[in-house]
Image (cartoon, rainbow, N blue to C red; front, side, top):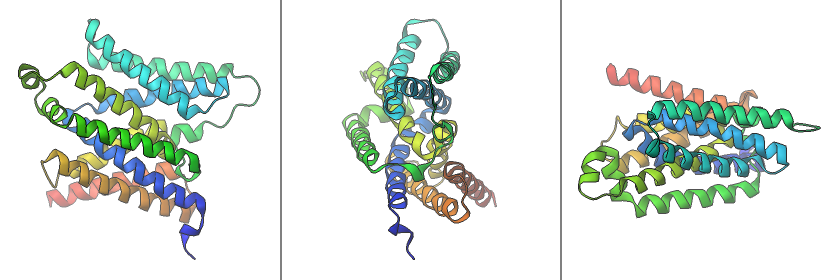
Length: 264
């Protein structure tokens, strides 16, 4: 009996593919620029948007997208105009975002939906309509990456030199923040807010063992991400265990095996 006869599994596989594309593009840039903590901060800010969505009775994912994008832009503005270090700004934003989410969830009257799916993910519950939104976000990421490819490469490897030769580094950094925000919200359905960082980071870090080319790193990272999602999905369905945590554990185990093989 084929697993693909179930619509929710077909949706989960498609969502896994779309998520892998986003992780490949953004995760590679994050790892190369050594901004993993930034991605974690932006991901946790999304919980504020989820809480607002629950309170207002609208789709929490869409409210999280708006809230996360605005927060990312706000953080970029704060780093530019305030005398505050990047790690401090990220830590403050991280805490405020989670606090806003908890506050609005607590203020929600009547029945409050289970938020475990948003915190730890459940890719098996991705509705068909949301796949189209994820595909559009992927297309947007792909288009932006192609449009600013040279600038993104320059800023990723040597931001000071990029600024000297005339690259609009402030614009590129803003674009990059928006790409991270979009990707983090996409990943909420798959692995949840708490585990987003793993799926963004592990495939990209693993791909560095095979190439130094940024483009090839993205391609290999996408293959790793899709493989992790497919294996995690299968094990989750087979043993009736949480899909998000299973996907991340598969990714982590694969990374450890790869590191061990490299050192042997």
